[in-house]
Amino acid sequence: MDVYGLIGNPVGHSLSPPMHEAAYQKREMSARYVTFEPPADAARKAIESAQTLGVRGLNVTIPFKQAVLGAVDPTPLAARIGAVNTVDFSTTPPTGHNTDAVGAIRALTHHGVNVAGDAVVVGAGGAGRAIAFGLADEGVSVTVANRTVERAEGLAADLNDSTATESARAASLDALPDLLPKADILVNATSVGMGENISPVPSSALHSGLAVLDAVYTPLSTRLLQDAAEAGATTIDGAWMLLYQGVEAFEFWTDVDAPVTAMNDALRKRLSDSKRED
Ligand code: NAP
Image 1: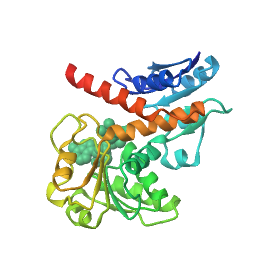
Image 2: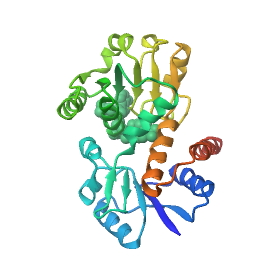
Image 3: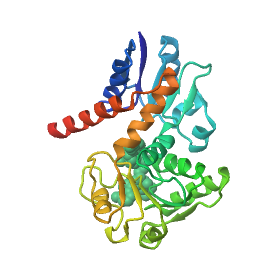
Image 4: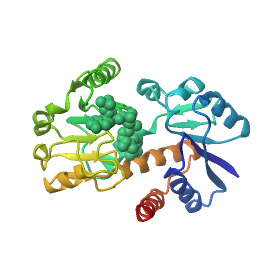
């Protein structure tokens, strides 16, 4: 039996196990997906131990996404983002991927969004970095708006240093009403809206020409997405990004086409079950 899994601390509420287990079942694979909670300072040891034990692949979440960089051979994209969320043990040293970036792009394309033009990424933390790199690599002009403007400036500079377009800009959240009328894509990559009915974006700035992806997935229907739907925008919830980062990981690890519908159904079932438990 092949073992895959997740390292993080904590990992108790992870949605990855049902999503990957559904894929193994659908593809009739003899595999299990196991969660591990190593101590926060034990990233390298966790990777080495997993390799020794014959684990085939690991997802990586907080607080290990940056720390595992030193224990793997990161892809150029993961190195530029500065974080790894998927480790593939079929190579020596193991390869560190960042599938959050492509997860966001595939969430957009799944909904028919033309990934081009101007995007505003709200947030410059881990998710914001990955999404901004993903969009910039597609040739999109990215403006990063963040509460802490210096962090947005750092991300914009990193994007301009390492992508062909060199068109990234930084802004404060106050600039959103000026930025959004010209934007084609809006992504919320802050934690604002997670478990609370608030939005980081003024509703009056939203319009029908926007595609709006909210990285937040608890709840699925955030205040931002409700406002965006009212404005006539295309809306994409955070579970789509989560789904496609998992789909990418599954395919790196197994070389098998991911059963996307089965994985999506399992993910959404777990999200609605956990909502009922609240
Ligand atoms: P993070 O690294 O801690 O970054 C948090 C971001 O939110 C920063 O930009 C921070 O701004 C901003 N922020 C926090 N509180 C704020 C507030 N009250 N007002 C305005 N901005 C605020 O977190 P992360 O890992 O990037 O995660 C961000 C969100 O994305 C979370 O909800 C997470 O669950 C979600 N996420 C989703 C996926 C997916 O697959 N759907 C993947 C990864 C993350 P400052 O820089 O000013 O602090």
